[in-house]
Image (tube, rainbow, N blue to C red; front, side, top):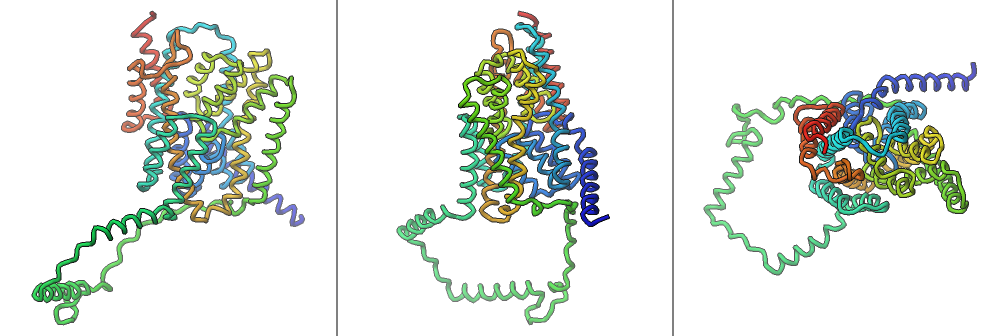
Length: 501
């Protein structure tokens, strides 16, 4: 057997071992990870940092910032990056499908079911959907608080989390979230480099010069003598000597002090792959090739007057997957613009799918699969074909960017300015998680007569449901799947109490 054959055999064996490890440690995540990206990040931290120790805390924070700074599904990119660093490309692709396909298949089936239901639904169904939305609000709010605890390390990050949250709530646009992330990065760099510290310091010096610094009163001779005596005594005691300069039997010398017990260091299991294994040249080439395909798809859509519906659907979601920054909080309004405003899906069906999607495990971007299937069924095409094209279009851009950026990140991560930028991006991204709470809150209450959604605050019962799931997870250890089920039960319970109009 030649050296090349031995190397190929070893690589194949390593890939198969990695695939087996991925199956063993990832198989259930696509079925049990409820609550959206904010909750997913916490699940990944508990599993891959604390339990398996595939990556350390520093690498987790770096990958979190990268996932938020790049377009596409945040938690999906995070899971892919963790697995590709640990096991390589093919096992990481397997992890991606294990993670995303269960929810995608469920959303495809849901689109087929919704395409056959009548225009009128019972109030029990509306109560169920509103309960799911309210429970999701509580879960995401809890995840945002827990992510904030990790992101906030000083006054700057605390300020950026707050400003990111408030700015995200006040306005929404395609360009807005990326700009907020860039502002956070620049602010952190400016703070850490102390670029803005010079002018305030000079102003302070000028004020002190004008006011004049108060002179200290000179010590009297007796006070000066007593101060020197006390200083000498303190110096002798600190060095274990008596007043004659000999070693004092009552005081141990510094050399004889026992060493404090050393704290056990966290032992990180070394990964077979490191960031140095990723080539920045390959990463750059991959991103350029992807952008070329995007440009070609957009040119075809713009220049060809009559195109098949399925192509237009794919092109819309391919573009959406490229320009969505901020993950889940942004994908909902953008998909509404790209599908509902095109007349492919009704507002009621959009919100109905959105409510049920909150109770599905896996990435929120699977909601695009539901819209793709429903859109295809609307024009008489196969819902499965529409769902498959939507799945590829919405996920592919983010995954390409994530893999390509790892090579660039291996070169840039050691630079202080880049680390400062990531700290700012991380803080702003955590602040933007709070916008997901307000987005669902504003349209979470669904009932007859307002199928397009109203604020959960219009009925105090939904406030109680959201508070129950938050408190249950915060203080009683209620898991997200149980909280989602509890919200559904409380939603149906409200219908049983209130009854039909």
